[in-house]
Length: 182
Image (cartoon, rainbow, N blue to C red; front, side, top):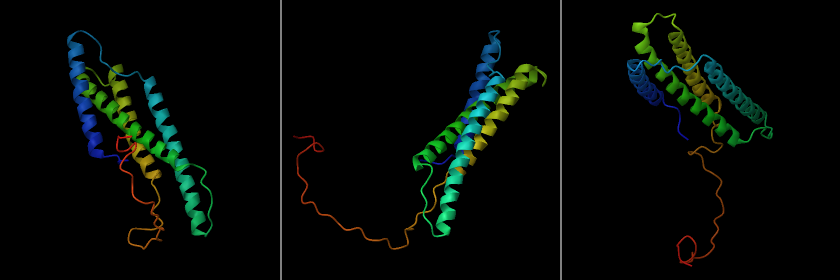
C-alpha cells in the first residue's frame, strides 16, 4: 500500500479546480446555475471523516496497548485484527482523495463566482464551506495514516534471524495446473 502524497493530492485538486471552473463557465453561459454541492453535504463529508478518525484512534490505542505490554515483558492479544487497520488506512486515504477532489472542484467554481458575486452569495458560501470540509478531510486522511502505522519489525534486516529449517520435497513435476498441461 502506498502512502498519501501531498503532491498527488495537489494535482487532483488543481485538475478538479480546472474542471470546476470550465463547467461553471459553460453552465453559466447556458443560463444554468453553478454546480455547487448543498451545505448539507458538508455534514456527510465531515461525519465520514470523523468516523474514520475515530476508527484510526481505536487502531492507535490498540497498538499502544500492545507496545506498553511488550515494554513490560508481557504479551497480550490484539483486540483488532491487523486487516482492520489496513481498512481504516484505506478509508482515510479515500477520504483524503475525495476531500482533494471536492475542495478543488469548489475552488474552481469559486474562481468563477467571486468576481461576479459578493462573498455573501449562497453559492459562494457553499463553495467556501465545501473547500473547508475538503481540506479537513485531507488532513484527517494524513492523521489516520500516521495513527495506523505498523510497528517496527522485531527482527530488523541487520540482525541475524533465526534460521528456518529447509524442507526438500523433491523435484517439481513438469506437468500440472501451473504448467497448463494435464
